Image 1 (cartoon, rainbow, N blue to C red):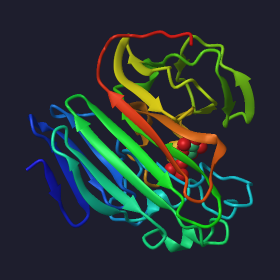
Image 2: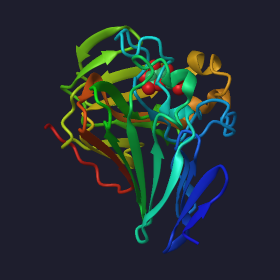
Image 3: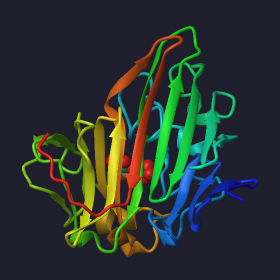
Image 4: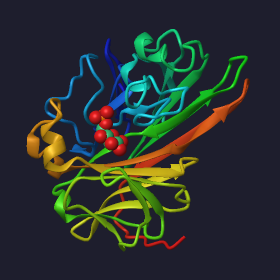
Length: 298
Ligand code: BG6
């Protein structure tokens, strides 16, 4: 069975390899496991809550309609990262057989009401459709957002992908030199001067307006372990909490788990997207295997 629809989760299995699977919680439409031929690709905390009591620490949580905390009046009362990751989405079914793809939907009636009510006046009408496609050695996560309302509203979107690595101290992320980033650790903006991003402490940077022609590669000991492509998602957040921040997160286990993860998060977060009545917007992330290093200057 390529698609198993359980009460709380949907499991997608590759028709050509039973060990290539995607597991998706309906809570947050959160992908919490992706295996390629039996090998896990995503990091998931041992203490992650998978029961809908809080957003999942790991996998691919969905960030909407605000990234982090914002002073913008439309979202300033909302908790960090908005309500998409804390709402139970509707499973809309399978859309293609091979490669298998499934869809999940979210609108105002299913949204976590406590957080949704803090977006503008609490009455924005919206539709989100998430399409997940499982290929032999890649996943595609696509979001389609539409505004059926009579008024415009604005939002951030971000795929908060936790990628698994063997040892963060051996990891580099390429193709970001020359990009402007806002460094959330030191609260300053600057141009990236390092030939590759490397990790030796807490790192939390928002790279702004990075051409989507640029491939982002997670390289470990000289070998590419993940490739991330983006469509219509110009910003990239790179995050690793390191020791102290991990200690402060109750759902982050083991405490040295930060060594095994890197968040590469494609999004639209530097600015808000404004959607007028009847308008649509979409963005896509493609994570794939493939070991050729590709260095790009543009
Ligand atoms: C990242 C942010 O995207 O998410 C970090 O850049 C933040 O600043 C991290 O700490 C985790 O957020 P949360 O709400 O899941 O703890």
